[in-house]
Image (cartoon, rainbow, N blue to C red):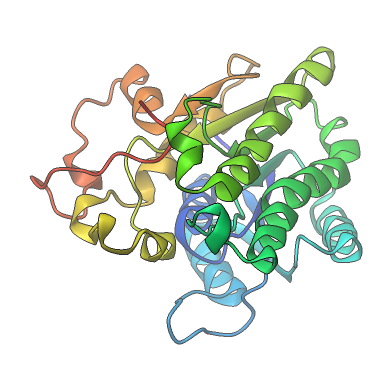
Length: 273
């Protein structure tokens, strides 16, 4: 089985949640991990910093480079990419994980929140991809993975939170376009989305709609991401993948170990019929 040993991953938003879990799983292979996130100091309500994740990566057998990075800032992203290349000699994988969420209707979404979602989700994904691409195209085994849903134009996914939906779909459309644009270069661009809601800080945005015990742990997404990123070919290029489906195809049939509360009914994630 192909592993991520010796490969360099540039992961946005890797200081907690799904990004942290993907980083930790890759570190177990002996990968080099660039932790590009804003969390330099501990937040009272949001545990995890770039330094704490760096320690976990090193303990797991990987090499870590924590870089405080606001992916809305072009200069910071460019500097982070330069530091990554200087330290590890290149970039093989980009994981666009960082995302902003605000679930509200049109009249209840302040433009400040609208701008944040578009700056992080759409512009940030595009910017990080653009900055990493010159190095990815020299890798020979490069991949971009966006944590984004399959585009679903059913109006029900727009009705309650049109701003978040179109901002999140912007990440999906980056996959659609870049997968085709760079297909002949050997680069594989794909998207990954969870079948159920994942127990991260973002579930607080769902209010009383989802309880933590109705969620799965971030490790299910990390294990699926590992299979995608360690594939030796472009089999996933242009695909919108679901974590559970990827794992089933690899032979996993028991998902109870990923549940926060095994036996409790799980809440399906947004954008999936």
